Length: 160
Image (cartoon, rainbow, N blue to C red; front, side):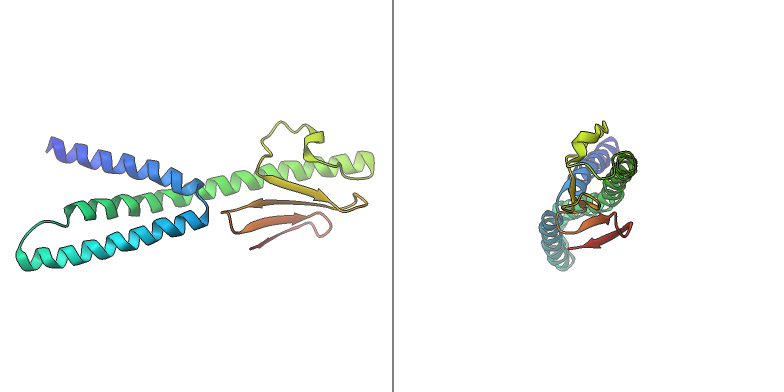
């Protein structure tokens, strides 16, 4: 009984750690892991069929691996959403400061660093038009999709 609890605890902890990794990975890396998950699921089903026919229990290890990856995918969803919301909130802070800067100076700055916001801007892209009357802020959602804010239209658009 004690070993079974330990095994379950290890599976859950390993799943959570892998889930955090998947949440920070690009969508392409997640595709690779999903392919691995599909392969393990196929192997588990095939071994399970042979287990039923020959009355053995060989599908235990692939079943555990499948369980770990499934839990990891489930855990990664809210974590990924948290990182996405964090980037959006960072952009909203920058947008408010940019509007204040524009009201005071009549144009937008060359870079976000000149605002001295005190927040991490490493994943945020910023640009202005040539007259510095319009700015654009964007960030990568998952390595493929982006969210982009246009100050002229005052709206977010998503895309590839």
